[in-house]
Amino acid sequence: MTYARTEPTDQEPDIRARPPLVREFLLVAGLFLAYKFGRRAANGHVEEAFRNAGNVWDLERALHLPDEGAVQGVLLHSQTLIHAANTYYATVHFPATVLFLAWLYWRSPLHYLWSRRILAVLTGGALVLHLLFPLAPPRMLPAAGLVDTGQVYGPTVYGATPATDTMANQFAAMPSLHVGWAVMVAAGLIVATRSRWRWLWLLHPAITLLVVVGTANHYWLDAIVVGALLAVALASLRLPRAARDAPAHLPWAAGAGAVPGGGARVPAYAVSGTEVAADSYVTGAAHPARTPAGSGAGR
Image (tube, rainbow, N blue to C red; front, side, top):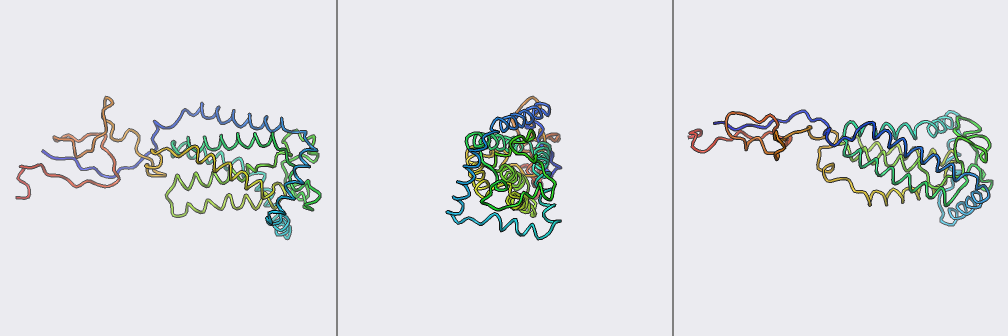
């Protein structure tokens, strides 16, 4: 009689935890459209948006926050740099978040579900603030003395006349979802991977913060508020234990250790006889071969 020895195996994503693709696509698309139409509903509050902008600007000065103009001044030293910042603002925000969710969906479904819920809660909270607190961005505020870099240097995603812009609500600066989504992308990738380089993902929210401030699309307070919202979402929706215990980036093998017929998982060394269970329990390290008592080995 021999006992099985479990060897490390190539691990695949747990497809049982992966939700149906079509359902997820419709869900995420529906949430995004609801957010876009919700933002449009907040449009038109021009006087209130400018009044709030003045209050935010005065509050930042009272709190001795850095002047947004200092960041913009650095960017304006080079037309190439300011054009790159405008391009980053216009093209990275949404595609990066979509790629993040798609990668997690395929590689780590449990991390995907957690991240999708966090982003949904964060975006919903941001929409409520957009409706309750319309805010003109600093590029529109005369007291700020900042340049609308998108209109002057391009590219821009906004119309030249904010009050009649049919593409976006330009009076929804508070909070900054550019920053909020970027922080969540970085946090999600750091949690879901084990590479020694994973902390470099923090460059994405850092660059995003400098870009949204330097292009005068957001105040510092817009980033601070979205950070607070994200902290609440993370505290409310904890990462599932199964996702915390699983090897990140290499989730456990689908069906590993499952006994045909729905039985409980058992270690391979617990299987007696000469047959080795096809679905051995994967531990990531080999178990030493065990010799049953009375076999005569080692005498």
